[in-house]
Image (cartoon, rainbow, N blue to C red):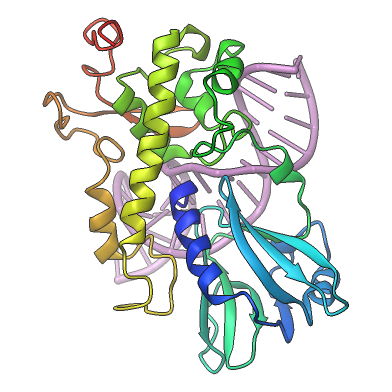
Length: 289
DNA sequence: AACGCCGCCTGATCGC
DNA sequence: TGCGATCAGGCGGCGT
């Protein structure tokens, strides 16, 4: 599922392709994707608009658009669980789950989303509610520690709270906790200062490595060459999985100590961890920092 | 007001 | 073989 690194790679790719291009027609094929606007409102607003710039905030894509009249306005994209965005030849038949299509002339910008959890919307409220950007200077020790110290939730669950830190999802939450040697079940407010500092570092490290790895994936060659986002592709899945140390590795040996990786369910989501390396009773790494 | 839980969606997988 | 049940999960909304 797309988290911050996957969205970052997509944003960079789209930033190289879209600025300067003008939407001749906006086609909304799934009304819920553009909520709270109606399909008609959304299509009218986007028709004749030009892409100015692309960026990312948390797991959101930010499209800066310029209307035909000259004023700029934002469009917010979210990939949900299964969203993809890419350019395809206009003559190519649209996929079954094409949710929104921008007709650009010889090419279409396609937002495809099998499960329709994604969004492409004029509403910026979700972005404004996000916490600090983990790879920026605003993700300070204090900004991270503050919400954790007030929370009784398990740290893994708290990491999924986008107001604590923006962009961490189910995969990288498990990965960052493994790297930090912290139990996912530890109540957030029980983390010691050294653990908070360590976790802040491993969140950054995990996300940065994933971006670096993602950017090495050939995005416009090989099978499914029209796709800009390759999650789910067997070739890159192999590539992707080899980066993951605990996620989806239940029963397999921990890469550090060999203990079988455990899978538990927290807040209705899978968590993977090493019961030895992430056990406060057996792991002394925090004390030795 | 932090927190738990539900609904939204489809496709893959599983059990009978 | 076929079909229904279950699972996957980001996030908004709602109730406590």
